[in-house]
Length: 192
Image (cartoon, rainbow, N blue to C red; front, top):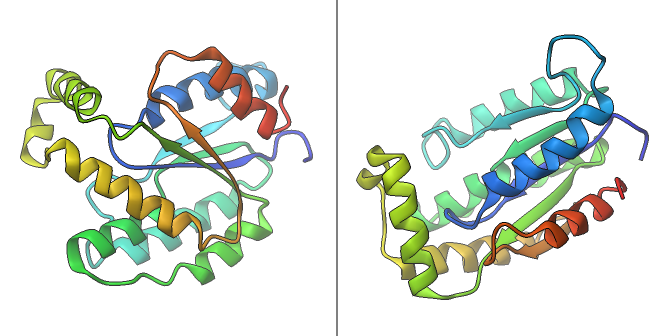
């Protein structure tokens, strides 16, 4: 891996801990590659799941994000939810299979890696995470589901991951904070 060229997708069901792990990885990568100015330019972080995936615009938005990532190919980029999220939402909410092979072909050229964040299938732990999410983001109540639904989401993500052509690492984030887990991700990325 050439320095300053990480392309990392964090995927996984809602409530697994992706944002937390991304913040920890970002805190390690960004300062290392920062140009030294007043801008956090050592790593770019895009939250791609902004109410579009699973709709008729999902594929278009994926392509546009990918155009952007290709345009800044010399930079480190982290994507929070991407093509596997579009595929998972299409499967879960529409019963449709989303062919992500052309998107993965482009991602592969960028040496993109996937970090699949999972959790134990523990309904009590998931219910606690949901309650914490609702305290921080009350609007999430409009799409909140039962813990078993998040477990089902995770199973769909893992099924889709098995069809991926990209290099990936599956991590269990049932316990957070978890510095050894962050270290495992950094090692997988060649940063440790």
